[in-house]
Length: 431
Image 1 (cartoon, helix red, strand yellow):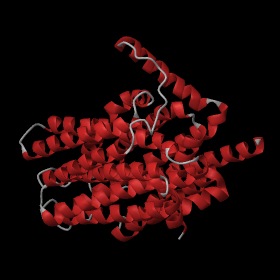
Image 2: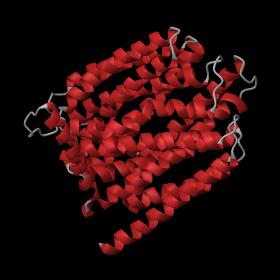
Image 3: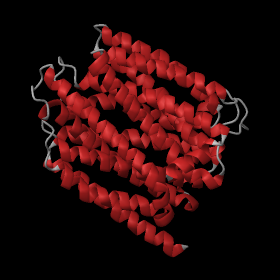
Image 4: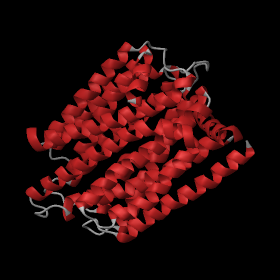
């Protein structure tokens, strides 16, 4: 199997093995923590969840750091990335433990969200650093291969973490706090795993002298502007277009995610808001997450050869076009079986496009700017997801069935495919 052969090649690189271990543990913990938050906010029997409530929760957790996220990239280009992984994961272990205590305590919702917000903030640094460090542990000839397998393996780890969270919640202990503690333990393991990497192995190459706080903030703003200008230069037009397309595809995926959450919570729950109803919906949501994870895995298998034949821009175009056709066909029945198939298809499509986008960014952006660009990438993801939740809050009824939302998402996918096809044809004609 080609993906197994490629993985064996990459695992010969000691730096790649150790960075991958940090990624798997860290993103596995993310999966556990995020599912714990989702079940607490959406599936708690005492909570009457609505699309607007989900949108508000996403805004509270993500939007504040969409404002400061780009500054994280400038810091990543100045801090040893190994130290970011070490201290970031240790800090998240502590903060996740605090979240578990708050779940067990009768505290105002804002205090719970503040704790979750801090974990999300640190996550911006860790995920952006993992992507920025990857070119430091493999050679240029194997970057596409590594970019296909490593982030996808992280996504699969997050999916597996989500599966662990569902099992703990449904089988071991009917407690969201217990699930959060499992996530905290995995964050601790991720921090300890980073100690196996030498401090300066992952870059960046530090050349800037130490500055005072005011000068540093000014330099941060200038560095951010320089990173954006770097991305917009003609040699990096492919990266800019790929980021734009991936942001819109993330928007579509987010809207459909909120729809599935509402379907699982109400339309597919046999007992409404009683105890058995939410648990049945939670089981269906867990199945959807697992099937979507299978789509991520298949994306890792097929994307390298697809990119080789179609090039990254062509593969993103094919993914968006396929989503435009398949989303209404699979989602409009609003039945569990076809939507579970859609979870697999959209997992494959979204992850396939992300692999291609990551490859374009990493291969065209200079090393000194990668931290900034991947932080901007992260922020675009957050804004897109929150925007999608806001749109879903307006368009979705309480049970999650909305023909207009599905038609809108399909139209956005089609627009992405058309725009990327035109850009791809122009790029080829100019070569």
